[in-house]
Length: 407
Ligand SMILES: Cc1ncc(COP(=O)(O)O)c(C=O)c1O
Image (tube, rainbow, N blue to C red):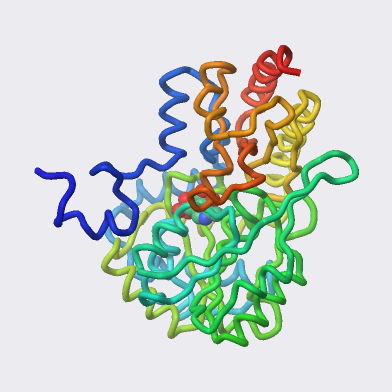
């Protein structure tokens, strides 16, 4: 069968096919490289941790109890109720589990169904840049126009890398063609959390341009300082916001692909109308297990974040003492390290060589920018600390050996 030509024009037009091959995600390519070379994988963001016992046990019990067939399209009621309860308990947001909550196949499907349901060709979609790479692919499939707001970087007084977003840049990204603003906080790849002023500016601009806010909050519980502030809690935001999260990161179950959306009923119905033709439903036995996770005591969530925070410190302290300029993230799975102190100005090239030269895999930050837009971030790498302490310690030893003759 032909791999290029008129049959595959739609995927090619959205930039998803290159020379007849599926454009590989940088994560899959780098994980393959880690497997090939035996390098330690600080690239792809999947944790080494086991899920909390209560979550794993509930999944096993559900399978044994025969909960293995199609669940309802909106999701099992036990999970929808747990999601509504979680939103109320943690954030004071009240949602009707029957009409304002939708379970999805990970945040990935939630994002795809939301963008495809709400964006028409020519509509503008605003995201931060760098951005989680799925956003650009789905915006392109929907025929949307991707506008971005730069995350800027500078050196702080202590020599660390400080990442930020300027309110003026946020406001300037909106126009009368803006249909949707996609807010990712806590942010992948930088671990940045948007401060309340930035969030309020987004709400104000969205209201002024009658745009919908979509918020990707998959790292909501993995915060190391101030708690996550959902944009839907800001005055005037809830009715125009589609909030998306998932179980993968919080409970260390990235392979389960259980996500969810909360939004007002007409938005849920529109997104559901799309979702039902994508997957219809998913993960029957995992749904009650995620419900068990969401109803864990708050202290259990704090323990998960604290454990991750220690590994963040291990990685960032280690990278700093090796000689990288580092950004210490406030949340999430990843730290950003600048390789420029070692004369490495192109992290994409460095990440190709690093598995062989150092036995460590990282992801160039440029993978999270539109082509050619990385600018000052071209020498930055994203390194995951959701790995075991032993993996992080060994990676640091290897990076030290790599760095020593280059200092
Ligand atoms: C910002 C962000 N959004 C969405 C996803 C996808 O989430 P899920 O695995 O639940 O589909 C990820 C996974 O890496 C992510 O980092």
